[in-house]
Structure formats: C-alpha cells, structure tokens
Image (tube, rainbow, N blue to C red):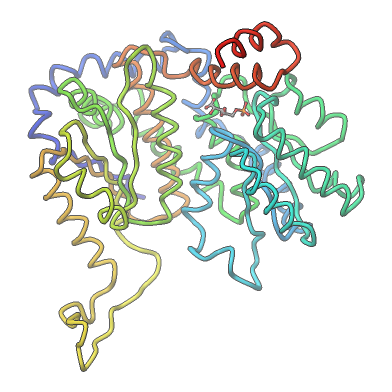
Length: 447
Ligand code: PA5
C-alpha cells in the first residue's frame, strides 16, 4: 500500500527551504518530546501507539458487539459530543453512500447521531421518528457527565424501555466510557449494559481509534481492521526515527508554523468530496482544541469545494491575506459517472461530453489551487489514492501526529482543553445546578 502524499510546493513562496531548515530543530524536538513522553500534557499520549497496540481480542470484542447490535436494530443512535462524536461521524460519513439514509433493503443499520447539540426540535424530531422503529443506542462519554449526551441518552433510554421493555432494551444499549469514573459508568454497571473502556491516557479528540470511534464504525458495517492498519502504517511513517525530511507530519507541522509566524492566522481545510465534510469537522476540533490556548493558535476553518467556492471563494481569493489552505484530495473516486453527449447541445456542455465528473472536479481543484496561491493563499495538498477505511486511517493518524508536533512547536499543551469549561460553568450556574450556588449568585448579578 502506498502512503498519503503531502505536497508543499505551493507553500514554498512563503515558507522557503531556508525557513524550513530554521524551524526543523523545533519540529524534531516536538517529535522527540512526544515519543519520550516528557512534554506538556504527557499523561494524554495514549493515542501515539494506539494503532500498533490494539489487540486481536479488542478487535474481536468490538466486532462481536457490533454484530449483535446489527442483528437487533435497524437504526442505531450514536450519542456523544466533541471527541466522543466527530471521529465516528467523520469515518461513517466518509465511507457511506451519499444517500445512505434513503436506501431501502439495506444490509447495514442507519446510523443517527444525538447528544451533539441541545436543540429541542432536533431531539423531539428524532424521538418522534424512532417511536415505531427498531433502534439501538451507543452512548459515548469519557467523563460520563457531559450534559448534551446525558440529556439525549435519558430521553432515548426512556423511549427504548417504553417500547421494548427494560430487559430487551438493555441488550440494545452499548456504553463507551471511563473504566471506573463518571455517572455513565455507574449507570451502565447498574443497568448491565455491554461496555467498552476509553483509556485514561487518550483524550476525546484523539480517541477515534479507541472504542469511541471503532464501535460505531463497526456497527455501521465498515472494516475497523483496515482503518487501524492505515493508521498503523502512518504511525511507522511518522515514527521517532524517521528523518525530518521524510516525516510528513513533521514537515506539515513545521511548515504551518512558519506560515503562522509570517502572519497566516487561519488554516482552511478544503475537500472536494462532500463525504469529507465531517472529516473536516473532526480536524477542526483536533487542531482547535489542541492549539487554541494561551493567546495562541492557528484558527481552523473548513470549506467543502466546489460548493463553497460559490460562497466563500470570493473571501479566500481576495479577502484579508491571513489565511492558508490544506487541501485533502482523493485521487480516484469509488464510483463512475460520465457526462453524456447531447446532440442539441443547448447547454453548450458538449466540450465535457465523455469526461468523468471527477475529471471536471480535478480541474476545478487544480484551477483553484493556482488561483488561490496566485492570490496569496499558500496551499498544502494531502493526497490519498482513494476514500476507504485504510486511507482514512492514514489521514487520521497523519493529522493527529502533526497536531501533537505542532502544539509543541507553538509551546502549548496540545492535550488539554481548559477553556471548554467556561461556558459549562456559566450554564450550570444559570440552570441553578446543585453545587453552583455561589456562581449562580454571581452570574445573576451580571444579568
Ligand atoms: O476532546 C475533548 O476532550 C472534548 O471534545 C470531549 O470529547 C467532549 O467534550 C465530550 O466529552 P465526554 O467524552 O467526556 O462526554
């Protein structure tokens, strides 16, 4: 299997070979710190060797639980938020038929998501839809106390128990959480659910290759062994002893920091495949929560091209020159669709007749790449041969490793997220949660 390809040719105008040489030592030090486990946040480095350490027994346990769930449920609701949601969604959406949820006579359950918001309409719509459906639940929370998934799970649990009875419902619920701590662990033990453990040393946004991602992905019918195999090959390709010049994660991490030091404050992840929309969302969380702290960080944004060329393209081409792009490009589509010839040619499209749609997409990509770099927007390009489990695994690990190195170059702790607590504290104070009496008084005085 070949590896993903990182192309930095179109960032060179701003990040020269001399710049790269100058930052190389920082990137190498970052990589070393990750592997030596002596950098900031070193109690959350479990993701580093995860692909090569997943055992046959772990795969088999997940696959058996997935098989059982697939036998009892037509719909499976994955309940979780942030790192307990986006990885699974990114992979499932990336691999599914674009109209998956509309397909009848399907062999896989329909995967639905809840607990990633507290929209009342969303939740009510979902509960109403599931009233007469055979459904199961995978509830995922490392802390076991996150409000959004806790609310969704309480409602879904009530519905499934009402529909199927408590004993049958118990067999349709899987919990993925901490081995001992948190309300979800207590509840799952008490109710006798099948459970999977999120390792202590793996943070949410780095957890897609633990049961957090692997359980829903396996239930959706995808090959988790191939996903992990791709990540494992990237673990080798970005390893401690790989020279800087040959380590794609180190080069990417170093180069994006050069751009940042030269005033590029925003990185836009670009895809040309709508199925990668949630991969971008996963990537945004990975870099956003890892780097945005201590008054530092490159702001991670995302666009789906060519769709967003008709909305955001103007800004990217001619707006403030504080952005760069990273294009995730899929070399070969999985499906074939050829543009037909038309005798009347009233739409003047015969110049494209006989071409595959992907040929047009690729020329849009190349044309955009040239236009944006001409417009002062440096472009990385990360190419995978095709969109499948193996290459999504490579992409996941490539970006995780780059994120760790990049965080150390920036000199932040890439593995904590203290800022996420601020809104929760205010929300709990406003909701008068027991234990927040002082905060409630203080916040009410400000209203
Ligand atoms: O990356 C993170 O740590 C966060 O995004 C968490 O994953 C998210 O807040 C959900 O937390 P939990 O899994 O504890 O419910």
